[in-house]
Amino acid sequence: MKAILVLTSLGIISLLAEIFRFRRALYPIVILGLMGAIATTVSYWWYDDGDFAKYFGGMINFEDSSVIFSTIIISTGLLWFLMSDTFFNKENPRTDLVALVLFAMVGAVILTCYTNMAMLFLGVEILSIPLYVLAGSRKDSLSSNEAAFKYFIMGAFASAFLLFGIALVYGATGSFNLGVIGQVVEAKKEVLPGFFMVGVLMLVVSLLFKVSAAPFHFWAPDVYQGAPTHVTAFMSTIVKTAAIVAILRLFLSVVFDDITSFWMPVILVCVGITFVVSNVSAAVQNNVKRMLAYSSISHAGFLLLAVGAFNAYSAKAIVFYTAAYSVGSILAFAVLTNVIKDHTGGPVESFNGLGKKNPFMALVMTIALLSLAGIPPTAGFFGKYYVFNAALQAGHVWLVILGIIGSLIGVYYYFRIIIAMYFKDANEEASVEPSKQHQLVMFVTAVIIIVLGLLPDLILGIGSAAEVVAAK
Amino acid sequence: MSAIQIIPIEWYLTLSAILFGMGALGVMYRKNAIILLMCIEMMLNAVNLSLVAFSAHHSDPGAQVFVFFIMAVAAAEVAVGLAILIMLYRNTGTTDVEVLNRMKW
Image (tube, rainbow over all chains, first blue to last red; front, side):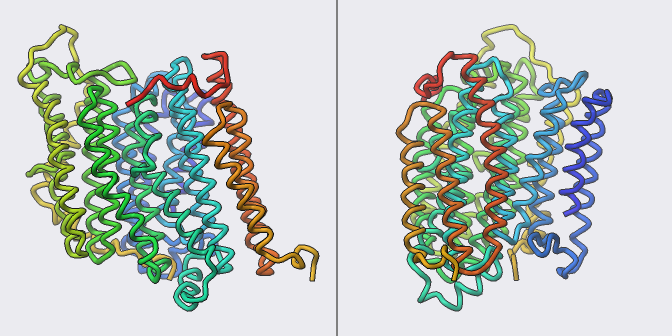
């Protein structure tokens, strides 16, 4: 909760920086502030789950799972800021962009701790509205405009569905509080009106929109490709984590657990479609950025499979997967922004000969891609392993088989880049030397990926505490 | 019993569902960006209508507060949406969303 305050005040400070002319000092202030936000978030870990973690009259409950996911989100945000100095033009920063990113992170943190439908709605909107602007932050580029407009229309459309779902659930149960809704559903399961089920269905659909799971993914590739690459990195890590946590809190808690037979098939069918559509589409892409967009849709499928498993392993798997996936994506995008300067991405051939031109970047990119493909000894392997484990315990054998086939297709398109880097000759002499700061980010993320791949218990022990007890 | 409670809740629900459906169909099938924005507003106001009706039905003011949240957020959203639209208009000279086809497959 204190993280929300810290992030909000950082955002306001960024806006003031424009007026009081301390723009040059802003970047260090934001980095330090984010570290402070991580520290205050982690400090909640040692609190008991008492009333003092509740805020706004119980509309926010900052419990163990919120601590874990907020820490993942803010740490990813810190890494993102470190890799995005070129996006803000560090010497003379665009302070409005800094503020928008920080406000979007506030929304993401709210989604990890809401216990009330009002906070769910506000969290989704606080996360989305700044991102509409960020996606269009290259005002002169038509692709950026197109991305912003598509994202806006689809985001507002999904928000309307979310709201109608909330309204119908409220109409049936008479409360916005998740705990009360859960009690009513449990007590009156048989006599709830028909529109309650329609409402739950609309909630599922709108949240699937937000995580960009197929068949509700059609906006994602265009938006991810057209938006500035740094914004794409933000959307495919922090936004995805926040959206999946929102689903986790709503469906994997006491709220709708008595009517699983109703909403579960929807999620499972979407997982199956996602595995097929995203991986096949990614395999036929030649634009690296668009390929990463489809790959992030396929990762949303894996996260949803863990939700669909609905057992004691789910939360653990999601914690590990989001951490591994966020770090891997940040690393891949950090390399991408250094290799391909064009913000709509470029062909796989842009990576030709990178192994000779810049062995360090080629190595860390290989680590990132191996992790995204799920090959040991990287973090991504254990992420997929725990998801499959959870799904098998729940008996979803066919989805696991589909997921494995999807991963194999994934190996094909990730390895195309690795092959281009090491076995093709460079076609141009343009040097690609990342700045010291980018090298640091790449090094740190690569080390995290390897360490998590060798010692998965580091996070797994914490992950078992992520069982959502929301709204009790 | 106030006037809003005399009419059965199903009627309000049907009306707001019709409005919501019209808005949703409009977003999917209309090509003018300004009409798209209006359709989204219509969907949000359909939700407001059903929330207010439910609020009277349950005699619970919570939903009316929620309506204020929705109005505030919808205002922010439309402000951003119109800004994006103006940016688009400056670059393309049209409000037809058919021009937004630079990226495919």
